[in-house]
Length: 224
Image 1 (cartoon, helix red, strand yellow):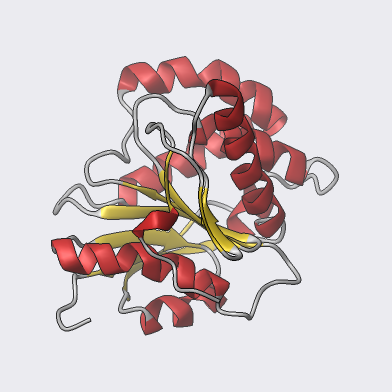
Image 2 (image 1 turned 180 degrees about the vertical axis):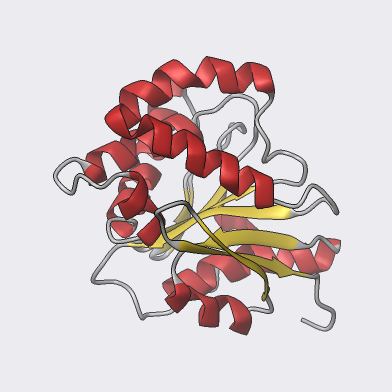
């Protein structure tokens, strides 16, 4: 498969045509209708990939509605108007990144978001709000950094290096532009992947009656 490059970048707030590179491609938003379809594609991939994620399983314990609710929450988050989001898509995987300084919602946007979040999260709204607040509490304010907000590969396609290539696509630019990168995960199995990509675990903490979480940080590398 061809390597992912910047041509595979999806910026949800930019207008561009779809650029294709074999089985790995970047979606571009050329009009509102196609833009919505692009968001739905990414949400579909990530919701399927997160079905067994410990954080998602804790936040949405109802297995019957979990994937649907995750998809709706992702569509809401990805369509937020107060932050750019960039996404690399390859095969049945997607990685969503937030540029430096764009990860925290303003108080105004948080208040605006509650009705939509209540509709999508249902009875799990208190857990969703609590979980989001805890993640924000542990998220470093400085130095400015790229934030890997979501990464997922659809079951059945895992173990093929898709996730690694998706993350590397942005890390190459981080190194070239001297930006750190940050993420959090509730899946201990993913820590080895991130360590191989140059990340180090910064902290481990526990959600109340929930899973362990790890914050992971990466300084820009030289000679990559």
